Length: 139
Image (cartoon, rainbow, N blue to C red; front, side):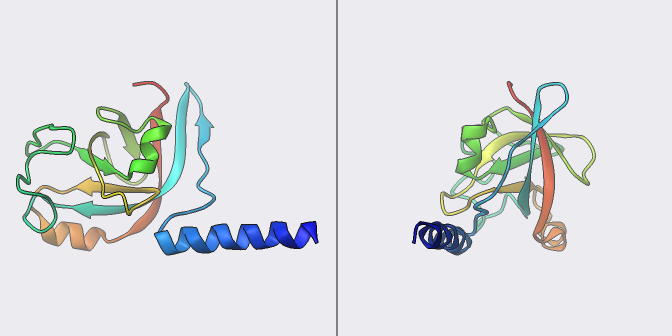
């Protein structure tokens, strides 16, 4: 009986997570030099009406976005792991270092959104992918 309840609980957790768009088993891994890593779903967004609020060039923590900046938004569940305003992040498959400057709607989990300025075509081409991110434990 106890074992079947455990199986039921795991199935329920995975189902609820899938319905919410998250990953019930997202694991934070320790990397060398006191860094952390995890696999997230990565999408892209633009500073255009319909994808942001009234001021598409101002991010959630009141940071002004400027052309050429390498910016990401994070789902709110990632903030508890240190991915907060100003955190530097390496993204698998992308050159350079990105800075967390924006946050996503609370309906998203285990997700980042790569800022692609006003280039909607580039954002659509990027699509949705699973990839690894690495960040410092401390800012």
